[in-house]
Each structure stands twice: as structure tokens, then as C-alpha cells.
Image (cartoon, rainbow, N blue to C red; front, side, top):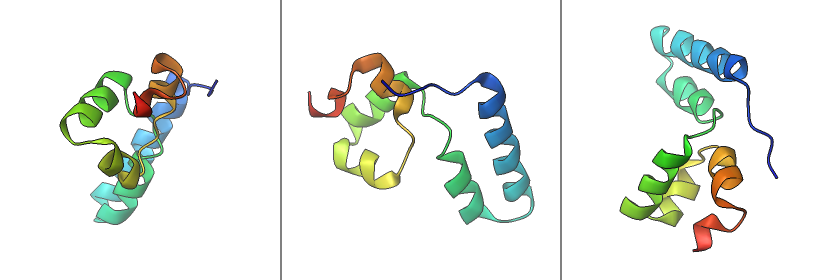
Length: 76
């Protein structure tokens, strides 16, 4: 089962992403913010409304959704 990030780890990612955004590096912001786990409820909504392929292609960290919904949650 995937290990979840601590709140401090998530905050550090958010702070780094915000610094990149404020510096005008929107590509860096997008790349860094996707390393933080997407909340499971958002991942579920994204899967239902947009689909599995776009969710995977976007490169989001889905570790918390996998931990909550199970390893094969994208296939169900």
C-alpha cells in the first residue's frame, strides 16, 4: 500500500509551487504541484467526470486515492 505524505511534506510542496508561480514559472508550478497527492474525493470526481486516461495522462499523484479506494480503483 502506498505511503501517504505528512502535512508538513504537502505544505513544503505547496510552498515550493507557490514560489515558482510567483516567479512566473507556471510550468514549474504545474510540475511541482502534481507531486502532492490529489485528495481522494477529487480524484474520484475527476475519474467520473473526465475519465481515467486524462487523469493518468495529467500525471497527478494518486497515492492517497489508491490507499483509500484500493490498488485497482481506476479499473472499477
